Length: 336
Length: 240
Image 1 (cartoon, rainbow over the protein chains, first blue to last red):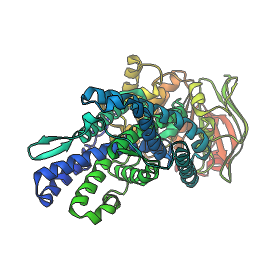
Image 2 (cartoon, rainbow over the protein chains, first blue to last red):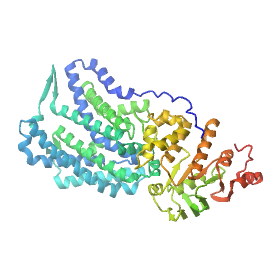
Image 3 (cartoon, chains in turn orange, red):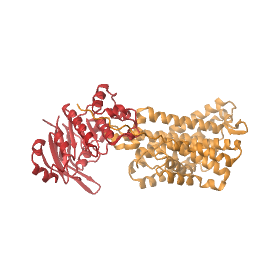
Image 4 (cartoon, rainbow over the protein chains, first blue to last red):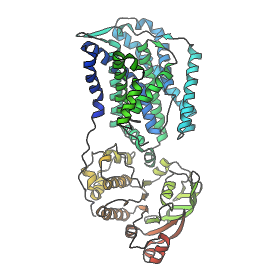
């Protein structure tokens, strides 16, 4: 047997830390303009918490696009469903949410989160089968059909829950701020940051340490070859679609509590923002989505403080700048 | 030898193009069959149609006694076919190890089998935990072939494994293919390099315009330069 020579040494791959350092660089660059360190801390934590909520909502969207090349403009519907489920579950638990003890506030949130994620995941099965499956591989039809699905879902929510805003007060224990020196940081925003970090760490662990994760990463890159190796990518896709929708439901709960109100228009309101985030991050990349969400939220917060009018277009401007620098996003995964 | 794979009157349309126009040939069990032909003759389409990556619009494809032309690609793969595409299609974001873990499907990686593979491809051992995207073209081809043989399969479909590789690597790759053949694995190999085809093939099928225009023993075909020129359009000297 002749052994093929091991050949040239493996070319050194330069670790690409630059995109991951962008949020830090942005935050440090903003400090001298903001002036006050306490304001800067407050704005930065607010940006991070908003970024984590956007990440929770958009992470499923980026995986679904990466894995199956599906542009799901109906993803926002699951955010709205999650928000309404939270309102539904928390209403009879007012005794717990109004208690001062942290444990009772969290104990009230837990069933709300479970129901929101479960209902969003269950509805996503019907959504995939009825709307997405007939238009695989047809981007234009995907946009039209899923956008139509979003509008139908929104109208159904209005029909079920009424067109009015529903108040969703934060649990009492999560109200108020924690003071670090001169800086006041809202408790709920800290909780959102922790939840976002846990979601990110869990997703990365699943993607890098489990066989399902390997299959997802392989499928994002070349789903045809995954099938040729004997795996049913359709089943994998449905699983990812459900998980992504469940995360959108969780994001909906977090967003509704942050705004302290529920309204079906949140679905359309956040759809464009989520697409901006996943395009900035690189379609199909969870890490890219994470960094992209933080960048979008930090820029929005800093711009809102420094140049309020600029905040209206800050996410679009950020996307333009990033795409001029890296046309396939910060962490490109798919070749599509 | 009884045929392991039989294609009868296979047609494939891709969009409005009629690529395969009634392909008939057999792949005997335990032998290496070369599928030759000019660019655009339909060789890659034939392999992809067998794997179910493009659907046959007519005709039958049988793996031993089982009709597979309507099966989904994962079922065809689990029936015992392994596919090495022309593009290699290694998962560049995954390590060498992770690529092979996926290829082994439900089985754990077998150390003995790995040692056998590393005997051909020591680079894969050296770069075991490196991302496949950082490998050179030759190393990616090694990984692509290793993925197909990491578990015993009934039939290997290999599409132009020597394309774009340095001559030194091509020679060793031929040795690897010979070793796979000696192990009794049935192989259907698309190859443009006639020297490689001659060295490895037991039988040859030549395609032109989406049909098989010649099928026979490789030894006979290799000895008939007139036929080679007629069917492949190039003499042996230029077809290397």
